[in-house]
Structure formats: structure tokens, C-alpha cells
Image 1: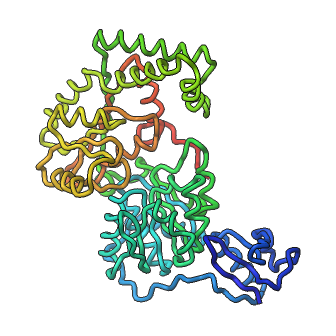
Image 2 (image 1 turned 30 degrees about the horizontal axis):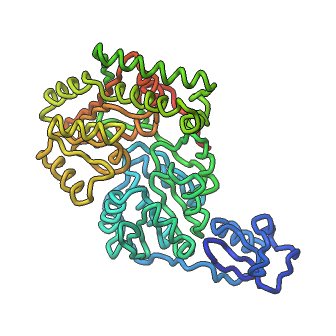
Image 3 (image 1 turned 180 degrees about the vertical axis):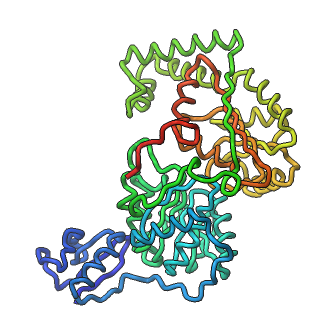
Length: 468
């Protein structure tokens, strides 16, 4: 009888009686390698479902001591009916054997789809989220849906339960010990999962049922192709333009406002830009190449004029991101939308704090303490604060349904970031039309950055290539 055991995020197959060169039955040998240290074959924990299925199909007797997850008995029925696309997504996920990635826009109820999948699989579940804000948000939603205690891992909490929510970092730390405790793995904002570190969360887990959730699956490094191995194939996708407005998402408009540098700023920008580009040209560095940025930083650290080149780069970027005209435009927009709920987005903390000081607005960055962040968001919800400023911490997942106006003061060239920021203002409510302003400094590198990040159907541009 073949013995299956879980050890340190891996699956041990066989026992000491198996010789190193002995063939394994049912074709599972291709998944395993002999480990002389334990005198057994070792496979990735994530291969557990396929290995078990092959053994079962071939009628090979086995003793499964690996699995420690349980069936969830007596789950209450969910309190509301799914929307049509949520039901379609669940059925597509089921057709793929309870494995796969679902792509839905921000604000369309991906967390409720996860609840449907958890109820369908009815196995001990781990939900993995990127931030502590999302950990608290998911825990409250799951408790409301299923009752009973919901475990949390992260932010000082270490309380595993049959349904548990964890940050990515905490899941990575415990997976080698607890990877056999969960039969369902739900990964929110799963575009973070591929890569050398976080991918071990999926590889070290036995869970047969896997659901990845994201609004923006593509990664510039191409590692979105790993979804099929880590979570299952892309099984369902809807973009913002595929869903009816008003009932699912608020109708929205996007407005690009050109910003012009003052004369003094223009001269400083040109001087810094020319110095920076001259350094690139002299050292034959192209930032368009995948390794261009790394080559630039190494050259800056190695060469005598590198420090000045880096300072020039930072200077021209700062001027393009936060010129005086942007602050004047922000003031005009805040006055025009004084009765709305407005989120101001920036690319960096320094600009966020500048705006907060200039307009007496609360600022949320990754430095903001949890209780202060909660107070700011509650004040924004009630109208005590008509506007808030953030750098990047509100890009993902955090629910701010009151927001109906977004102002992108500065940002990266990431399509994902841009779509996430649009999603923050699309929660529907009666009579609501969302409005997203994008302030773009003309005749600077910011114009190219803005063009890159708008390559998405939400902005009337072609969609990116499929992830898998």
C-alpha cells in the first residue's frame, strides 16, 4: 500500500520499502523525485489532487495520511441571489473541476463569488489577501455569510479556523506547516501570486479546490502564464464594458486634463531631462528593455557621474508629477466637486502629503496607522471629509462605495493600477455617475506614461493579450 504524507509544504509518496529506482504506479513518477534523506519520493504539495486521482483511477491502494482538511458541514445558505455573471463564473469554475482564475472588474462582487465557491466546495478554506485592510474586510464578510468564527493570520493575529483569512506574507510563513489543513484555496488579487516567493503559497498547499480572483490578471514579466499551474486556467472573464451600468457598476466618464509647466519649471525640467538622457546615451542604456532600469541603477552606482544622473532623473520626474499647475487644477476640481466624495491618487507619498497639507485633507499611505486609516475612511463615508488623498494603498480591494470622483494627480504606467483606481469610484448607487480625472503634464515623460496605462477596454483602447 502506497503511503502519502505531508511534510514541509511537500507531498511524500511511498515509504522506506521503495528503492530509489523503483517505478511508481499509475504514472505518478513524473511528478515525484526520490529524496534519499527521507527514503521516499517527494512531490509538490499542489500535485496532491492529480496524484490521488491517478491512484484512484488505476485502483492502486494507498494510505492517505497527508490530508488534514475537513468537509464543512452545515454551512448556512447564502443570503442573496447571485448576479448573472457571478453564477456564470461559478459554473465555469465548476466545469474546470473547481480550479481556475476569474477576472471581474473592481466593485462587481468577487468576494461574493468566493463565498459561492466556498459553499460549493464545502472544504476547509484559506483565503489569501494582500493587505491587512482586506484581511479585516474579508473576515467580516465571511462571518456575515457563514457565521461562526473566522480565523485570521496576519497583523499580530494567529488564529486558524476551518475558514481562515491570511495575508500573503503570513500564508507564506505557515504554509510549510499548515498546507494540508485547507481543501479550498482562494487567492484575492491573484496577480501578486506568480513569482519566486508568493508562488510557494500555492505550491505548498494540498487544496484540490482553487480560485484566483483579480480585475487585472496580466503581469509585465509574463508570469501570469503560471496561473494554470498554481491555481488553474483562466475560466471566466468580464471587463467593465461587458457589464450593464447602474445595476452592476455606476456609469462613468474619464476626462484627461492637460497640464502645462510654468516657465521656470519648464527650464528646470529640460535641464534635468537632458542630463539624464545624455547619461543613458553615453552608457548605451535603453529603459525600453526589460533590464534597462536595473542597468541604469548599476551604472549610477558605478560611474563617477552616476549620482548626478540619478539626481537629474528624480528631479525631472518630480517636476512632471507635481508642478504648480496641477495644484491649481486640483483646487479648481475640489471646489467644483465640493458636494461629491473625491479620492486624489498620487504616485508617491511626498506628493500625497503635499496635497494633504495644501488642502487640509486626510492622507492615507502605507505609513498611516490602522486606527487612523479606519477613522479617515469612516469620515469619508459619512461626509466629514469630502475628499481624501492616497498614494497607492487604496488601489486594491478596499471598499469605498461613497466615492464618485477620482483625480489621478500622478501615477505609474501600470494598466493594472489605472484600472484599479477607476474601480474605486464605480460602486453603484441611485443617480450616481462616476467621474475620473487624469492630470497629465504636457511635453514631459508623463504623456507617454499616461498613454501606456490607458491600454484597456475601460478607456476605449484594445484589451491586453490573454493571460494563459
